[in-house]
Image (tube, rainbow, N blue to C red; front, side, top):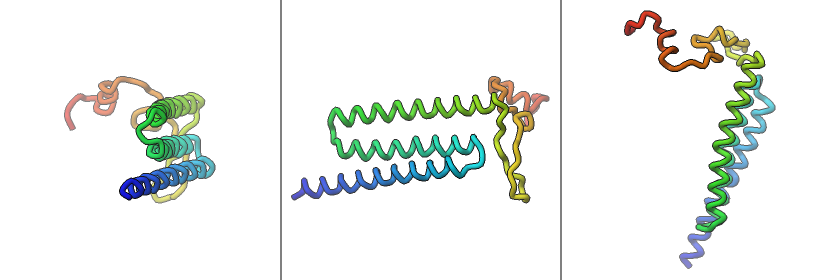
Length: 144
């Protein structure tokens, strides 16, 4: 009797995780279509990919139980987490090198404009050590 209750709880949790993972993938797909520029589309895609895959694989691990299949699913999740972040970073760098700029909203106007990297406080394309960034923001070296 207790085994049936435990199996029912595991099945219920597994279904909740699987449905939630599918929901996040669906929201991410809608975000890919509806977002205005490449950077927000990448954001929607990478977040839904990470969270959706995590929830789906967690649901499958619950169904697999403590087996080799569960270990393989966890390895697959690790690979997906690392490669998803690297791919998103590579796409963002390629977009910046292709002179694409993120859209920012004008306060009070409610419309989006393109912001060039050189208009940022610290240029986005400038890959420098953190000490140089701090010096650039505070050129005199004195504490504010």
